[in-house]
Image 1 (cartoon, one colour):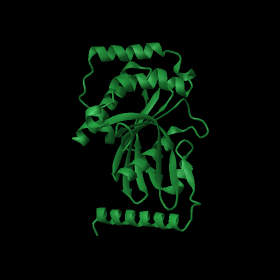
Image 2 (spheres, helix red, strand yellow):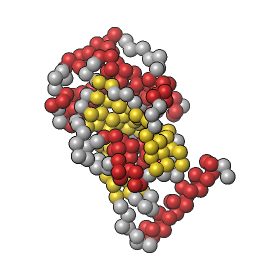
Image 3 (cartoon, one colour):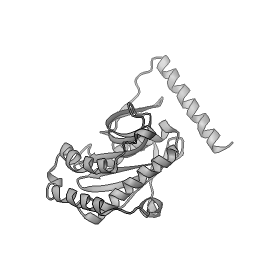
Image 4 (tube, one colour):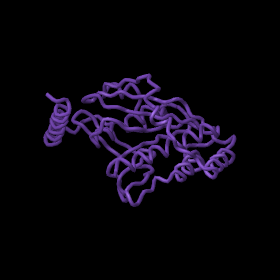
Length: 244
């Protein structure tokens, strides 16, 4: 049987099982919050494996985007304004002073395409065996009034603490988006302090995934921040292409 047809049939069977469970009143389905999920819980729910293949980021990172002098000057000012403070910022400070100005400069508000960035977006993915839900920090999605199709996620935190590792949280969000969109690939990023990591998730089969994590980009250094900017701009251009 064609693998795509088989996956579609398995998904339809899962959806039917979920509906039957609801009708029978079997509502004791375990729920996992994006903000609290950890690696051990992800591995209980999914067959998921980290792969070491930095070459997979080549087409993303080795782009031919050229930054103007005005953009480079803006990025340098962003570094100077936050110099010595990033490690002391709480999560909201980090977002307001360092992350949002960068995202606003990229400008994911694409009104003519019906696409924008959403902050603190409620999202849920449910099967007959578990529910993933919660609020995601930032997502670029189709829809201006409400999110309809999530394309790219950013999970940001001040530091890694108990329930604070953003990597499994980002992966849970990416898995949800892949399933909700019926996609095979999706991109995202997570932030700890000034450090950015980009991620690619690939669906291999029913509840089976592999993922790739990029090198660290230090947003307090101008060359790294320029790379972060170009990587985000590449995503914006890719989303525009997908919708045309």
